[in-house]
Amino acid sequence: MALEHAILVSLLEKPGSGYELARRFDRSIGYFWAATHQQIYRVLKRMEGDGWIDVREVVQQDRPDKKEYSVASLGRAALSRWLHEPIEPESVRHELAVKIRGAAFDDPVALIHEVERHRQAHADRLAHYLAGERRDFTGPDAPARAALDAGQELQHVVLRGGIAYERMTLDWLDDVLATLHRLTPER
Amino acid sequence: MALEHAILVSLLEKPGSGYELARRFDRSIGYFWAATHQQIYRVLKRMEGDGWIDVREVVQQDRPDKKEYSVASLGRAALSRWLHEPIEPESVRHELAVKIRGAAFDDPVALIHEVERHRQAHADRLAHYLAGERRDFTGPDAPARAALDAGQELQHVVLRGGIAYERMTLDWLDDVLATLHRLTPER
DNA sequence: ATGCGCATGTAAGTTGTTACATGATTCA
DNA sequence: TGAATCATGTAACAACTTACATGCGCAT
Image 1 (tube, rainbow over the protein chains, first blue to last red):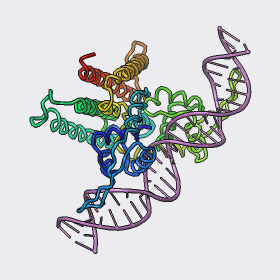
Image 2: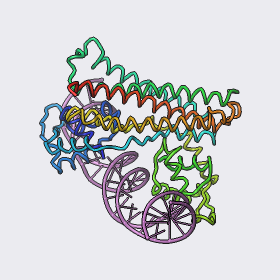
Image 3: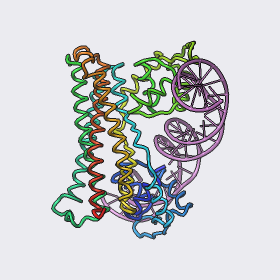
Image 4: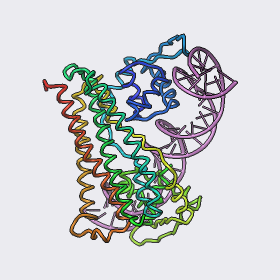
C-alpha cells in the first residue's frame, strides 16, 4: 500500500488537514497517485493510531475548525523504510487501450469522439503542467537554478515526467485517430 | 469495471480457458490491463452466470481437461454497450514518482539503484514490444500493409502506444538519474 | 434562501491481493 | 523423486468506489 506513503510525503512537504490533503490529491501529488477524501480520512485515522502522524486541533474564525496533521518520527521512519524497499515496475491500467482493441468487434468510428475527448483532457493537463513549471521553475519569477534545494529539484523532475507523459500521450492519440480514420475512409 | 470487458475482447480475439486467459494477461493484453488468475476465474464464473460467455468442456489427452470459454451474444452486446460509454481519462498510479518526491526527506542516493532497476525493466519491455512488432507487423515475414484487417491495425496502434510509453519512460528515468547524481556530486 | 467552499465522517458494495489447496502429466 | 507446466479453484483480507450524511459561514 502506498497511499500512506504518498500522504507522508505530502505532509512532510507541508502539514495540513484531511480536506487540504484531498485537494492536493486533486492536483499536484494526485497526478501521480489519485485518492478521494474518503480514502484519505480512513487512512489518516489508521496512521494516527499507528503513531505515524500527530494531530493538532486548529480553531478557525471564518471556517469550520480543522485537524492539522504532521508527520511524527515513527512516520518518518516508516517512509524511510518504504523508500529503501524495492517496488515492482508499474503494472499499467490503460482502459482506453482495451477499448481500442475492442473496437475491432464493434464500430471503430464510434470511438473517434471518445478518443478526441481524451485528447482534449490530456492537452488540458499538459497546459496545466506547463503553467506550473513556468510558475515554479522556468519562469522569470521562479527561483534561480542554483537556489533550488533538493526537494524542488525532485519536484521538478517528477513534473518533467508528467509533461513528457502528456506529450507522448497526445502524439499517440493523434496516431490512434489517424488509424481510426484510415479504417473508415468513406466517412 | 473493465476486467470483464478486457476478457470479452481477449475471448473475441480467441476463445480459451481461464488458464490461457491468465497467461494472456501476463503478456499481450495484460500490458494494458493486469489481472491474476484468481481474479479471472472469479469473473469468468460471474460472466457465465450472466450469460455473457459460453463454456465448452474440452477433453485433452496429454494435459488436464479444460473449459473453453467463448463470447455469447449477451457478452457481445455488453461489450458494445461499454464501448459506447464514455470513460474517465486515466487516473495514474505512479509509485516511483511518489518515491522520488519522498527522497527529498531521506537519502536521494539510495534511490539510484531502484531507478536503475526500473530503467532495466522498461528497457526489457521495450525490446519485447519491438520484437513483437517486427514479428507481427514490420518484419519481412509480417503480412503486407494492405493485408492487415481492422483488428490487426488496432492491435498495432495499441502496441505503438506501448512502445512510445516505454521510450518516453526510459528518457525520463535517464533524466531522473541525472538529477539524482547532480544532487550528490561528491559521489 | 440557495448554493458554494470548507470540513469531517459512515456504510455498503465491488475489486484486487495474498495465501492456501488440489491434482494431472512431462521431463530431467 | 522432484520440479515445471497445465489446470482450476477457495478463503481471508485489503483497498477502492459510490452514495449518503452533517454542519458552519459567506456571498448573491
